[in-house]
Length: 60
Length: 248
Image: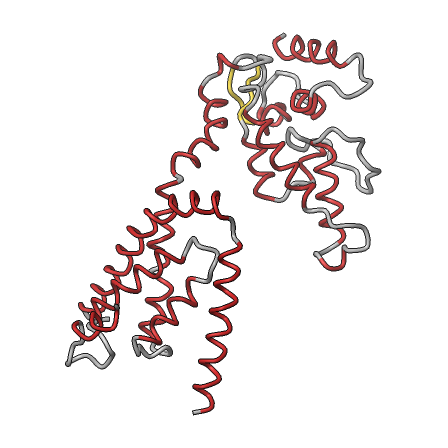
């Protein structure tokens, strides 16, 4: 752990803190309106994409 | 859209794909976005790292991936600080506002009740359907949960197998079935006996501390928490008697 790595870690912490502060409120509103169905769709698509990607990686 | 940005941020001296500070910013954004969405934030971080050609088995980056989740979680504690301190407020009111005590030997009327009710509904929810016990943990644990839930919700208790000890803490029989943290909590709940704040433990067995006031029994507490039992016409008189008993 040199100085650069500590700084990188702190940047990640602070940014995730700030982004999460904004996202939680917004997300609660969003879910009240739209529900969870879109997330299900997103997860299915991402899962298939990852499977294909992993399959290609192992094949190559 | 992102590709030229990535190209601009490329740093020649670094083994990875990007300047690590920018990588960290991107990962922080990904983490902040995904932690509270119903998707796996760790998976998204790792996918992003893989896309940025960060070695996934590198010890530092593994640590980084775990530790920055703390940032997002701290945001949640900040946002819900008010709500969570509210949920503790009834206990504080019970301790610090004895003038609200009703009847006088108990703390704030709604403080303990609300929390125990919440616990009771939790205990009831934990119950699996008959025949499903083997799937969800031990039978004894479920018997305990069911018993606590029944007692708190004022249902008729099922037959018990064990005798309770005579000098248990205030909730008495109830207490014996609570998991340890709840047990400790219930022992230290503030009660007002003779207009003085006592711990529940002391109120239950004052003789241990060399005090003279009569012991508070579990049925006092139970009646106070649950109201008069069904078909118990004498309960109001009993509570009044208990009150007189306490302040005498």
